Amino acid sequence: MIYLDYAASSPLCEEALETLTTMSRDVYANASSLHDGGGRAAHVLDRSREFLAGLIGGDKEGLFFTSGGTEANLLAIRSLAGALPPQRRHILISMLEHHSVKLAAAGLIPLGYEVGYIEPDASGRIGPEQITPLLRPETGLISIQHANSETGLVQDLAALSAVLHERGILLHADAVQSFGKIRFSVGELGVDALSLSGHKVQGPKGVGAVYMRPGVSYAPVYPGSLHEGGFRPGTVNVPSIAAFAAAAVHTCGLLEQRTEHYEHLRQHFKEGLQQCESSVYLIADRLEGQVPQVLPHIVGCAGLGYEGQYVMLECNRKGLYISTGSACSSGQQAIPDTLTALGLSEGEGHSFFRVSFGPETTVRHVDLLVQALHELEQTR
Image 1 (cartoon, rainbow, N blue to C red):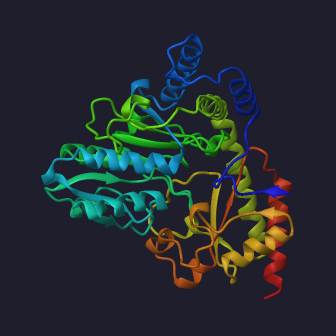
Image 2 (cartoon, helix red, strand yellow; image 1 turned 90 degrees about the vertical axis):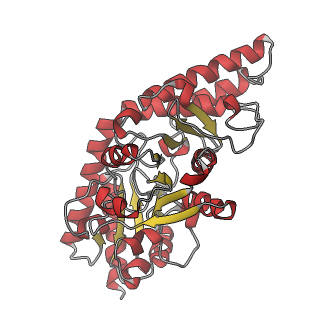
């Protein structure tokens, strides 16, 4: 098996696996219990919160654990929106957002909110020029992902937050894909809320986090909740949270080293396609205007002339695991909104497939993928 779908999920690193095993065996008490066992679990929870908040340059009081990135997006957006004054209930999200953000926004419409959508420019960028014409006196919240899961495009959130805060507009960012892949701090980005996920950084599935800037107003989705400072109900999963923190510390500690590795693999993949004169191209390389910043480990491709799902299945038959986009939207036949928003034609959109590298990916793995794509192209 050659796994090339790390943007969908990643295997547990040894640090996370050891932490998860140890904590599951030794720290099983409820962190809310008043006895010493509960106190020990509460201490582990507090330290995990401190570690994760520190990795994004935030305060531990602003970090709340969730069941994953999807819930983090839902709770962040619904909580921020719930505290907006009645005259500021216009919300904007980009066309490039993850399905969970679109779902959260759509769920606000029946509650009396108005939702609008932001189109990127020809280079995939969402800057002040794209947002400012859409702003209204009623605009209270905007959600812009930090990096896109299908193409790896990174947005300049710092440039946006400065414009929005002048107008008293809150900014939420989905940083599920960017966390552990590029360095950032919540202060530099200027975000009011941020979403994270454990299994994207070699932590366990079923755990994520929301960072809320201390001082920002929010209304819990579940009023009266007793856990996570009232942000979310339910017994806190201390072993998984500790493993998430261990994985995040490990991954962020190797960030520069892995970035160099991924950039080398990306370039090798491009050169391999060129050498065999493949029609496959990297979407990020075809965008007009300024060269966009992209996450080095995500390679969104198109142009082979086959349906992306067929390409994925043929690669799967040869033991190469790639994807046709976000795993949360797998199985859908429609072109991802991301690709439509970037101006891809219907044919290009249907031919889309995604390769994403991980720390175990080698040059040989990339060569085998290029060979498989070349062989498939020869059958046309």
